[in-house]
Length: 597
View 1 (cartoon, rainbow, N blue to C red):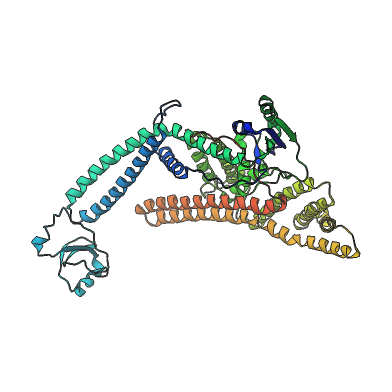
View 2: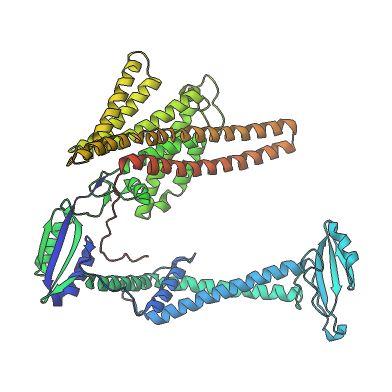
């Protein structure tokens, strides 16, 4: 994993050839363009039609049934197809809404039976209003001033009919009335059957329409590419019959741009970035499947071009932190089974391939840590066995786990400081990260060391503080006598970073706390299930199984959430806070869009 070297590329050619050159560069897809002029806001004239086409395309791609595609070259009337898809979408929504209404109405009416009400004229203008009243609310009937009758009951409810020509007040009874309607149950069920048939037809039509998704997607991609070309054309520098555009390109792609310029008789200039330039950052793994670290890094921030690539450290440390928080080999095996189940599905896209590699590493790290912690769904292995001998970590040992968490935090932040020191090695400011590394080392020796190590700890600690003081003070140029005082002030201000360093390292104690919480919950659920099974034979077995299933499911979800949130937090806040001092911006290639299939 590394930050790809960039070159600043300028292309110049005759103004009449500008559109053709821009389209060729878009096909090449290797330039991150730099606007040379300010363009007006892009406003396509067909925005409404474009949005309608996007909605239609999404309707096809989200269809559960996907038919074989019509290939490019098939006769295709865009307007007619979009209209047909839109109408299908509206019909499906209308039928679905009506079906939901009917299901609700049938549920309300079915408890009363298949009743066919007489015409209103036959009742002298009176109307029937239906209520399902809980038996415990029976006293509310004594307060009714309107005619009513109990027409049925079950073990928990009584069925009331109120007779009045006008709709009763909403608070007539402590429950809302049943919306019975004028249609009997058999008519409602017959309409529902017809609706289901119409829905089947509409779904089949939607499936048939999915044959157009490639051609429709190509039309959309082409239209959006044209919009982007127009936008780029408005940001070039045009003068004296010539145009010029500029952008950043990966160093290995410059040859392809120069060949394009040679083929189209253009002038091209490629040069390395200067100290004043701020190129975009492109994180590229040696193997595309191992790009999960770059995904995790870019999710929070993009390192500056001149910084270092923390992707591998983020990837590795996230897996370790997740494992310590989950702290159970059984849960890790369950994650592994989920990955195996979705392995083929995730392999269909590049992002899915990266995701499954990352999940595999996480599951593997979690399983190894779970074995070392001796926890299998909260159950410890039998004493004397191989698994018991492998269980060398006791998550309930507060003293040892606190030491382990703090050491991991010190190493993690130490890596960030070492990278910062390497980048600043040509300046006296390198003394600041080196000093903090010495402070960490000295503090650990004092806390954990013994004998000669404990004696050397204070010396290393003091040397670290002196280094930080000198490095922080070195940044100010001395022009007057007052600058000496300000330089000392800068040095003392630099030393205040000890509070941040101390707090950030202690923040890694969450690894111990969350791992202990996960293990304790698993053990608690196991104990509850075992106690219930012993105290209540027979039915207690079923209850204990339910407790195990729901309890471990809840703990599993909490463990995953904690592992993701806190595993990323320690990287994004503590680690990046010491390792990345400047934020960059991602490389965005000016390229044609892929056609979804």
